[in-house]
Length: 172
Image (cartoon, rainbow, N blue to C red; front, top):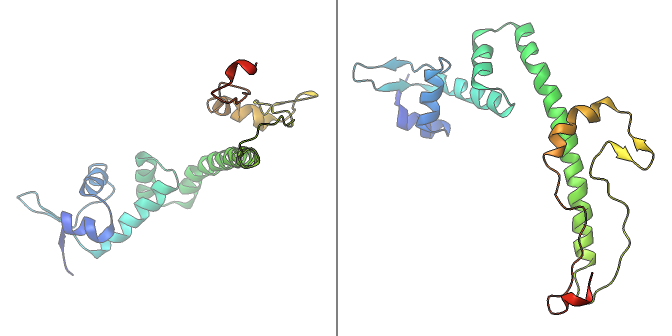
């Protein structure tokens, strides 16, 4: 089987040499051969390990967790690592769906106001905190789990008014 030096191998699998060294230093990706001169040689079998590392990294696993996946092949142990990741991704998905909805509203507003004429437009009330509505606090424990992270992404200003630069005194 053909062996590749680290530079050539890194190009073949689409990662940097630093990536390969990093995962070698963490005991996850071991070259097939390391010469006395410290040259690292890989072969095509190492490519599947690289792909697995990239997949696990894309799934949100840390280097330590990837190491655990490689060292412990028990399905139960891997499932134990995956469960919190699934919950975290579900929270991220809900958050991103909310962000997309707000961007769509902002986009619509910007498209509607793209003109030289000014007008006043009434819009629906906008509550910054997702746990409050016109009736009070929402009874949903999940909201209170994500609230600390949600607040980190809140804008500082609740509303604003745009006015022409040449007539600011006419606007309050």
